[in-house]
Image (cartoon, rainbow, N blue to C red):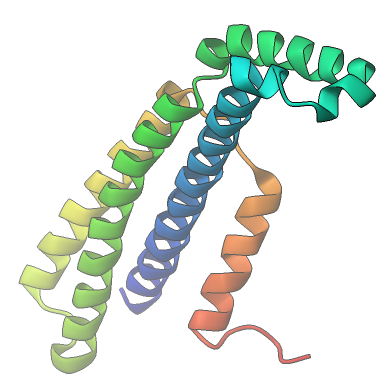
Amino acid sequence: MKALLWRAMLDSDFNSRYWRCITEKYSNRDFALKIFLALSASGAVAGWSVWSNYPEIWKVLSGAAAVASIASPLLAFSKKAEVAAAHAGLWANLRVRCADLWAVFQSKGETESLQREHARLRKIFADLEEKEPRLKIAQDRGLARECQQEVLRAKRLAKEG
């Protein structure tokens, strides 16, 4: 039971961190896209005298703004951030519950109520993992590796430099 609880705590911690980072990633992309569109699509920007010196750059920026405007609904950064945030919240809740269960195990050992709660948490864990493909958010392996390292450092399991 000890190994199962420890693994559940690490896995829920990882997923909580990963989905928080995914939320930040898409929120930042959404913000940057909106700022770019606002700045480049504004008629006032076109009137800036600086563009008279660099008409080719203005044409490229105008074209990029048009493409970004068309692609924005397809990229759906805002929706992805919203979906990821909801999923991150569910994982964060599970992380706290797993940490609480670990604390109970350390103080009281393996009990029947602990086993029942562990079974409930395993069901929630499975449900969350089953939902992930339906979220339509691509996996980010690099971000996953970063989050794994964060968990290892947080739990003092990472080898020091």
